[in-house]
Length: 339
Image (tube, rainbow, N blue to C red; front, top):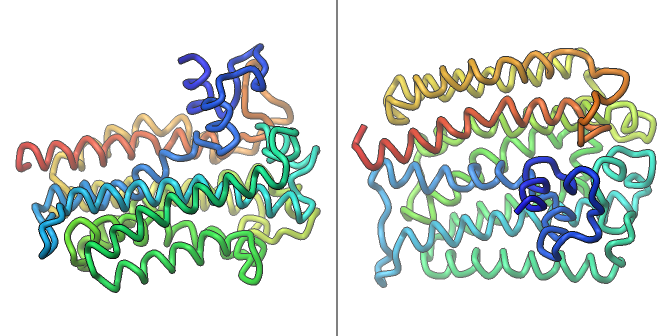
């Protein structure tokens, strides 16, 4: 369990151990960057939780459970994210980015650069994960027979794969951050809500926006950590375009806006009322990480810090965790106790 905890919480092997000697599953999770999957677990799961809270989950006309369809959409989204992580690694390696000296190749084993996989093996893994995502998504679309589900799926596919791949290359055009807000907010949450209920409305989409803000802040942190490397290689992320100081301020603003939005939606009755005080408590817990996010990165890694050369992304992720807890606990409590 020590290996899995280290992979999921630190994106690395336990201190002093060789990642190549970890169990096969732990290595696979490390290479697929499973530590960031909580963003998708909540991004896709919030729609199902919100439908449960509202009491709007419905079966199809043929009697297929809406809960089953929501779970299928949830699993498809998470498999698609894992596939997309590997696909981004493949594309960036082929474009000459993910090599020694570039942050992605230095903070955690890269599937190809580390020698863990050949091109063929990596492409096979991407195909298998994508096939699994398509299987779950296809099952949902066929059983629900709702054309709008296809629109959500295609939009998510285009934005996710177009993040690094041509012809869109959204990351290089300064549009990657916006695409993450759309995918991890309305598309994922709205998609699982639609799968579970058979319909979508403005309130359900509005409820997905706070987590979209926080997920975008995490990407801001990641791009802050790579700002010099990206700028020197012509990768024009939005963070590169606005500069390091403004990007730090924007990341803090995004996290703060996420907490404020969670609290407001709880206060006005869109979320259960208990979400509002939980968000307030979470925001207090997030303050130390926000201070780190707001400040310039140190010249070198603090002793024992495992993710170097990443710094701001860790702070953004930690700052967002209490919001995740507020949403999950609040929505479950609201559904169970009619809060």
